[in-house]
Amino acid sequence: MYIESPRYTERFGSVRMNHPQAVVALDSGMKSELPPYGAMGVMKVDEETIKHFENKMAIVIPIKDEKLKLFEGVISGVPHDCMIITVSNSQIEKIDRFRMEGDALNQICRYTSREALIIHQKDPAISEALAEAGYEDLLGEDGLVRDGKCAAMMIGMLMAKVAGKEYVGFVDADNYFPGAILEYVRNYAAGFSMAKSDYSMVRILWRYKPKLSAGLYFKKWGRVSEVTNKYMNSLISSKIGFETEVVRTGNAGEHAISMKLAETLPYAAGYAVEPQELISIFENFGGILPTRDRKAMEQGVDIFQIETRNPHLHEEKGDEHLKGMLLSALSTIYHSPLCDQDLKQAILSELTSQSIIKEGEEPPPLHITPAPKKMDIKKFVAAIKEDFNSYSALQ
Ligand code: GDP
Ligand code: CO
Image 1 (cartoon, rainbow, N blue to C red):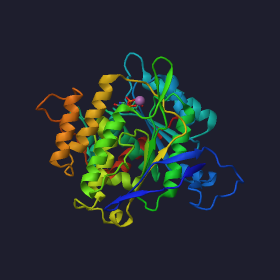
Image 2: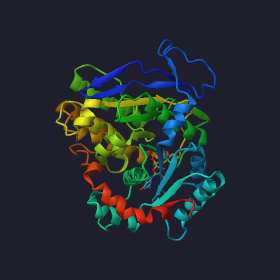
Image 3: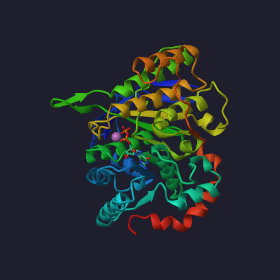
Image 4: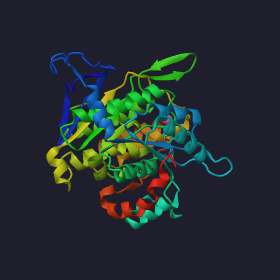
């Protein structure tokens, strides 16, 4: 593919956050000439490089009671060499949706001879393995893994680790365009190929997010994202003393992380998970708060934001859902030790003016699960090994 070269990089502490880079063309051909690096502001990421990274990547699909047709489309769009890890919290009683998801995955994997895992979030074998490894933070009062997309992502990440993958990417199950999924994953691979450090992250920026209102309208960004990005940028600006607009993917659900970086980050529950990843990176590696990750500090953390060619169209879950997402995202900033009084005040005004919280209220505290490296991964692997094959979609 052809992609804009990283033009400008914002640096704070050890974090190198790149301004968005647009995909110029989805394919760059077998024989096309390489443009001189950077000369035209465009670089070529060849097919071999993309495949090299896809082979080392697991794609985690969190799913909860989505339309089966959408899920099937999503699976069909994941590049063949990536291992698919589906983590489902779908209903089992009455209609066994989890089983239907497993059947759909099984069919595609059989036809195309590829690898995939499917795991139910509430599988007792998973919670037992987590308890064994001293990682009870992910468990609820009933002893099973908590609800929510964040817990699903973390299970997916751990399974990717068990499978020996070096990168883990996430795609939602409610996406309408298989072609968009294919592009997201290729963009992850392109991003990782540009990283100088073993600690890297790629976040997807949608070119358009169409809305269905009288006809199809190609809106540039989501409402929630715009507000989240604004306050994240304020947070950075207040620390570096220069105004910046570098953050454009504060809410990016579609993103990928190198396993090394993934292991060092704490994760916030529910929909706060993606914005909190950025906040945690700023906290841990921004050079303002102390860090314990010497290696990552030395190598630095590379963050890429890649603007897709495909528009993003997923299930619309209503205004209340959007308000919840905004509250979660702004809470991650509000509760960060990096956030000063002025910014806190601005966030409170934003949330009250949008009637998300009442005058005098504060965003509720976040539930944060400590970094996976705190758990005894060897014990987790040992506990899960026995059952590992039973999660194969080909069973
Ligand atoms: P949005 O796209 O960010 O507005 O959020 P969605 O509600 O579409 O959720 C993103 C993805 O996470 C979708 O694929 C959902 O099916 C999935 N999801 C949401 N909640 C859960 C959960 O509790 N467990 C799992 N495994 N997946 C979830
Ligand atoms: Co969605």
